Length: 207
Image (cartoon, rainbow, N blue to C red; front, side, top):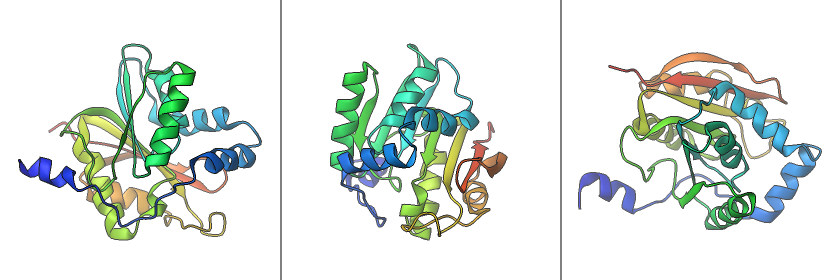
């Protein structure tokens, strides 16, 4: 077994895992006032997805964002979703089948992504990093950078204030520092314009 295979063989996380897949979808439907598709599309805008690109959604949950990304990249693109919760992956797979969207979902953790180096054009991390303690966040973002192709980009989005989301938040500016520490070049960051969500877009250097 190679070192890479050893690293990905034990998929454990020190962060919290959401296992309640069906209630999670109901919660999102309620907080978005039934407009989850519009909400997900707005989350994707800063990624500027292009037809034909390969995309990975880390912490994909029940798959709604990955399915939306599939529509953006078109029939020649590809989308993968990874989540630590088996129930989330099962619901996401079922949801994509019903939607007729070809998305590959796989159980895995952000700290040890089950994909080779330089595999994706775009990596998405939306409202997930706050579930991880600081060390795991750093490791997770390094992994996201590892699986990006040279010139590929990471879109990270998370809550910027604890009062909105009781499970945690990411301090303003931390998304930028996490990406920079992972060797990525931040090209855009700021408030997303939805609730208190903050975002950062970072690229993996070409050389």
